Length: 165
Image (cartoon, helix red, strand yellow):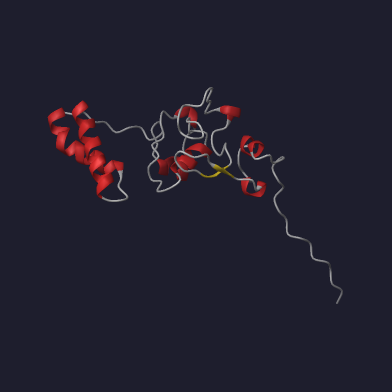
């Protein structure tokens, strides 16, 4: 098994220096093709409700955090950290140096849209949404973190004054 990870890391290093923009999954696939038969790996399909990929989690919204073992953040080309942070699934500190002390992914009973994140980049704190109108439909915890009051009422069109004909 160690040979598989060594081959994967070597491929990652080679592709990372060769050109900008590579995908880890392709490196893993190449490492498995080289080493898979020798290692006699046994594979099984994972239950998508317990191990959803990014597309299932963020676009189809099946299941809840309580039912999931891990969310594989693929199918997301950018802002992976932001999406994980938004749903309170990013357990590292602001600078991604260590685990947050007392981290609770279920804080305030929130399952999704828990942190008012606009965008995140690796190694730096996330930009937070401060426009309360943008947080309509988010969990109350996110609204609280953005210093917003209660959920705003749905906007209604202004009544036009009656015109006498």
